[in-house]
Image (cartoon, rainbow, N blue to C red; front, side, top):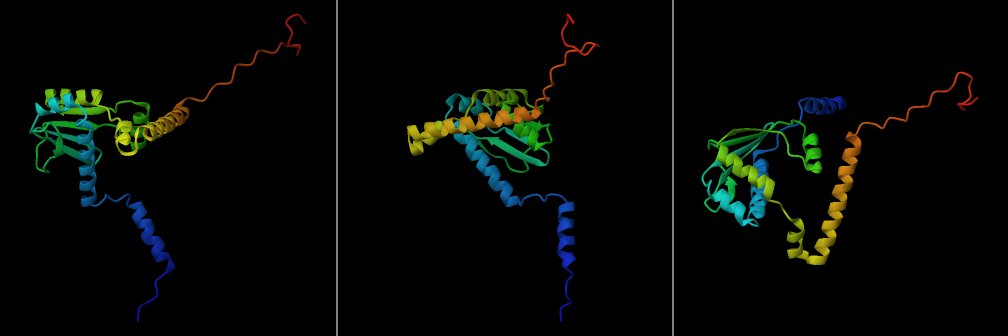
Length: 197
């Protein structure tokens, strides 16, 4: 016969898991997310022939992006696109995001700021990656227009821009120092506020 379990044992187990901190996601999920990121990057690159030509000069090179314990190693293919690099591949370029806070990174991205990055490795590969970051832009409205038509895509893009602007203003308002009230004019010793009294 099984012994009855205390109702507090479930609570103790839950508290122990919370105290241990967040658990890393399973490896299959990390790999799937990395594959999706590569597909998205290649989708954007294929819309910019000059970007693919720049990457073509770097074929076979590996760039590793690191943030805290997360990393993504990208191999440049002979087509001038990205693929996931083998786990054993030594990177030619390392890009490490210095900001530990995900919230601060997101706020910076909303403001259009580039994050602080520590760079080690091949200078020419770093210059080409920097050129991509400065010149290649994803145009979601064009992608949407291919699927739902020009007018609905334009309306959705306009709505998204307004929402992004509202979010930027919200973030900016939270980061701005509180407004100081105007300084009060000194009151004369006799209690009147007229200068001729």
